Amino acid sequence: MKTIFTALIAAILFLSCGQQTKTPVAEADSTNEAKQDSAASGLTVTVDSSSAAFLVRAADNTMKEGDLAALAEQKATIPTVKDFAGMLLREHKKLDETIKDLAARKNITIPPASGDARPMGRLSELVGSSFDRAYINEVIDEHKSAVSQFEDAVKHALDPDIKAFADQQLTNLQQHLDSAKSIKAKYWK
Image 1 (cartoon, rainbow, N blue to C red):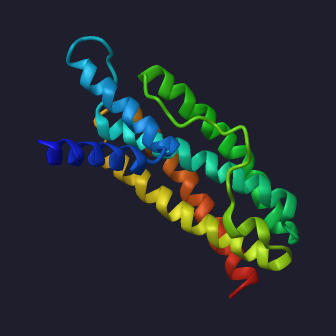
Image 2 (cartoon, helix red, strand yellow):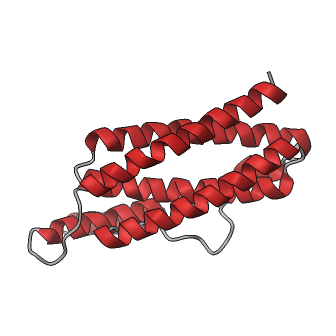
């Protein structure tokens, strides 16, 4: 009996110490899953889980891209890169507002905008042309991923408003990706 009790205490301590705080995306997903579970009880109605998960990730990516664009607008040394970052910053701010409005209408919890600057990894440490090049590469990678996510939402989201939103945004995201690729080809063949 003492062995079982000791093992139980050890397991509880292990689990409580091993728990890490959730990321904002994981927190939003958990909240939306709880809403899904309570929807069956008639407490809260929300959209299907795949539509909610898409909007959570779209919100997080849009905030990240906006933060990166703000950094690039300050640090870029090539005027074309600086102008591109400014355009992305404006467009991602508009997209962020659209996502917030849609999430509110659909009762979807999205990650909060951080009051502090988001971690920029090694980008914040770079300067000059090295920064410009790394930023454009980051934009290309992020927008490839975003285009893929939005295409998946168009195909698989069950909520018609979220599906329409994803479809409407695809053209802009593809244009951003194409512009970043053109900048890369012009300066860093």
